[in-house]
Amino acid sequence: MSDSIAVTLGAGSGIDTKALVSSLIDAQFAAKTKALTARKETLTAQISALSQLKSGLTGFSSALSNLVSGGSLSTQPVSSDTSVLNVGLLPGASISGLSANVEVRQLAAAQVVNSGTVADKTAAFGKGTLTITLGEMSYTGDTPTGFTPKSGATPVTVTIGDGQNSLQGIADAINLAKAGVTASVLTDATGSRLVVKGATGAEQAFTIDVAEDASAPGLSALAFNTSTQVMGLTRKSVDALIALDGVEVRRPGNSVSDLLTGVKLDLVKAVPGQTITIGTSAPTSALSQAVADIVETYNQLITIAKTETSSTDGVLRNDSGARELMRQLGALTNRDLNPSAADGEPSTLGELGVRTNRDGTLTLNTAALQSALSKNGPSVEKILTVGLGSALRQISIALTAPTGPLTASQSGYTRLQSALAREAEKIELDTATLRERLTRQFAGMDARVSAYKATQSFLDQQIKSWTRSA
Image (tube, rainbow, N blue to C red; front, top):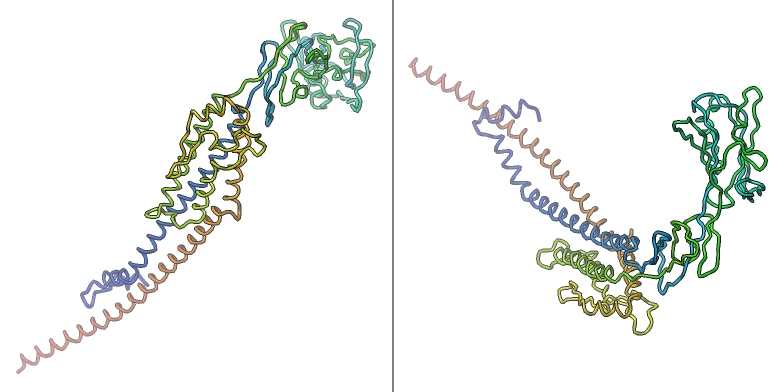
């Protein structure tokens, strides 16, 4: 439609044909547009409600998983003296009835050697090669007298050339070589010195053999082996010595995870002769609070689901995915969450005092829960840390999987969104087509009316002329 047609509409007839065209189009499409808008609003509400349910379900499962992984719901190992020995529960581990005595006789240590001081750590120091070999060192006093290379370890040769031939450059080259040691430059009022440190453990000692470049001597000041100790020994490499229930064992580090099943030992200091008792502490308060939180979270989710699936005004009242979510959640309290439970041990949330109300929400009988905790604490712990978490994950996966009910509902709404978008585009196209056609029709009519008016005016003038002549 051209602008000139739109502007001149009604000029001949005197009728506001532009408004008339708009009124006719509204009469033709208003009902369809209104119905389409209502369907869009309903669909938007359905998508929002379904997303809220999916988010609530996955959030419920994730929150419990995070709580479990944090360890606060699991029986924890405890140390009688944390200034000597700390203990912790390994991820995913479960312990009960733990009782052990540990004596920390020696901490594991790393070998450390240092060079003499130089005034400028960036000044030229020497060129050549440093060969670093890992292994076990034997000593007479503080003097290395024997060295056995570590099985499977290959000596690493570090070339010191132009650009690396300063104390700082040598430290950088050693670190870049990844030879199993770390190097740094320590600077104080007396000057700068190279410090080389290995890993903890007796087999992590090291030797440094030097081959100097005769044209740029100086590297020999960094030699350290059984025959030449130009660098000074600051600390020997030794294993940790631990006596577990009187039996001494060695470990290369001060964090030990393979002595007590499910327990990590962190050695703080060596106190030969002092026995540290390791026992357990049941998380009774945390378990009790967790059950209360689970009931509250469940009720929040089920209330949302009930509102959105209400038979009177729920936007998801005909949604099969939402109904399946409610069905599976409703069966949760009686689901077996501890299949290996012995006779008399609880295996369901119902046996922990969690009751289902007539409206689908839950209530907690705290007396029943406290009784279960006092009589069967480990079973309650297992229900919450293993059984319930697994059940929620299974429900979440089953409902939100690619072929799950909630995913199917979401896919259906997405398809409906596309269909409504196409319908809206068609209405818009039909509206434009009708407006164009009516505008042209009224433009033609207006032109004819204008011509009729011109003829009428001419005839009026002629008749008046004839009348005056007569």
